[in-house]
Amino acid sequence: MLPVCLAAGATTLLDQAVLTIAVPSMRPSLGASGADVQWIVAGYSLAFGLALVPGGSLGDLHGRKHLFLAGMAAFLLAGVTAATGAGPGTVIGARLVQGAAAGLVNAQVIGTLQDVFHGPARGRALGLYALTGGVVTALGPPLGGVLVAGLGPGAGWRCCLLLSAPCAALTLALAARRLPPPRRTARTARLDVLGLTLLCALTLTLMVPFIRTPDGGGAALAWGAGAGALAALFAVQQRTRVRRGRRPLVHPALTSSKPYLLGTAVAMAQFGSSLAGFLVLTVFLQDGLGLSALVTSAVTLPGAVGMGLSSALAWRLVRRIGPRTVAVGLTLGIGAALAAAAVALRAPTAALLVALAGTQLLSGVAGGLTVSPNQAQGLQHAPPQAAGVGGGILQMAQRIAAAGCLSAAPAVYLHAASGPPGAGHPRAGYALASCLCAGLLAVALVLWRLRRTTAPPATAGVTATPAPRSTELT
Image (cartoon, rainbow, N blue to C red; front, side):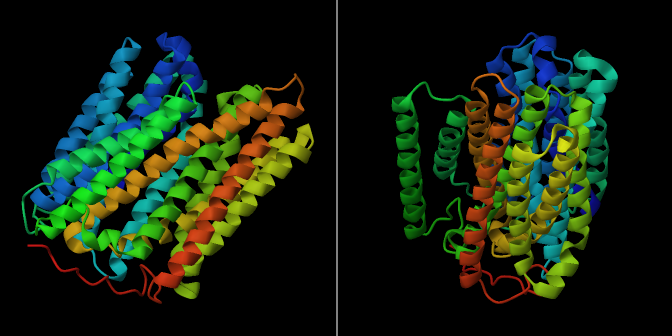
C-alpha cells in the first residue's frame, strides 16, 4: 500500500514540476497570451489547493479508496486532454480539472497513511511521502529541460504534460488492488456544506490576487478585506456548529493545537521560499543570462541530488538530535539563500554557474532535512477522525503560500533587473530575491522555535507516541 501512496504523490507533483522549465516555449507554440500561460501553470495549483480540504473531509466521511481511484482516473484523462489541446482554452480547462483531481488524490493519500500507520511508523510513512514529493519537485525541471532540448519547443512541453500519463495509469491499476477497502473514520456522515463553501471562497480570495495581479491599490485592498471578512465568517460558522453539537469542517483539535498550527506555518514559509527561489533562478538563467533550458536544468540538478541524499539521512539525524533536525535544515537553507545572493553579486562570470550549482546543492540538503521531519511532526497532532482534513489543510496552506511567494519573488527580481542595460542588474535582481527567500526561512525558524516551546518533548515521528484522540463531537 505504501508504494501506491508514494507513487500517487510523485505522479501528481511531477506533472507540475516538469512543466515549470517548459513554460517559455509554451506560449509561442500554443499561440497563448501571457495571461493564458499564467493560468495554465497557476490554475493547476489553484485547483489543487481548492480540492484538498473537501477531498480530505469526504474521505473521512465516506472512505478513501473510491475517491482515490476516481481522482486518479480524472487526473489521467485531463492530462492527456491538456497535452493534446489545440488551443489555450482547452489546455487551461484541462489543467484546472487535473489540479482538482490531484488535490483529491493527495488528500486521500495523507488520510490513508494516517489511518494505516501509527506511532513511529506513521512518522516514517509521512516522511517518505514528503521526501518523494520533494525529490520529484526537484527532479522535474531538469527532466523537463532534457525533453524540451531533445524534442524541440513545440513537442517538448506537450511531452512534459504527457509524462505523468503512464505513471498515473500504473498507479491506478495498483491502487485498485493494493489500497485498503474504504472505511469511514468520522462518526457522522454529514458534511459541513456551508463551512466547505466558505473555506473554498476564502482560498480563492487568497490565491487569485497572486495569479492575476490587482489593477491598483484599491483592488488589492478590496481583495484583502474580502479575505478577512470570509475568514471571520468561517470562524464564527465553525464555532456555531460546535455549540450546536454538530461536526465542523475543521476539527476543534486542529485549531486548538499550537504545534499543528505552527508546524503548518513553518511548512508554508519553507515551501513558498523553495518554489520562489527556484522560479527566480530559472528566470535569471534563461532570461537574464540567455542560457538554454538544458543548461538551466544542469545548474538546478544538484538541488535534487542534495535533497534526495539528505532526506535519506534525515531520520538518522532525527534519532540523534530529535526535532532540532528541522532547525538545522532551516539554518542551512538561510545560509544557502544568502550564499546565492553573494555569488550573484561577486562571482566572476566564468565561475558563476558552478557556484550557483553549489548553492543549489546546499539548498537541496537543507530542504531534505526540513520537509519530512516538519510535516511528520505537525501531522502527528491531527486526530484520527480528522486525518484527511488535517493533511488537506496543511497542503492547502502550502499552496496559498506558494501562490504569494511565486508572485512576490519574481516581482522583486524584475523590479531590480529592469534598470539601465548592464550585466549587473539581473544579478542584483536575483540577489535581492534570494535575500527575500532567506528572510522567509528566518521567519520559519522563529516559528519553529515557538512550536518547540509548545510541543511535548519527543522525537516526532521516531520516538513520539501518537497524539491523544480528541473527544468526538456528537
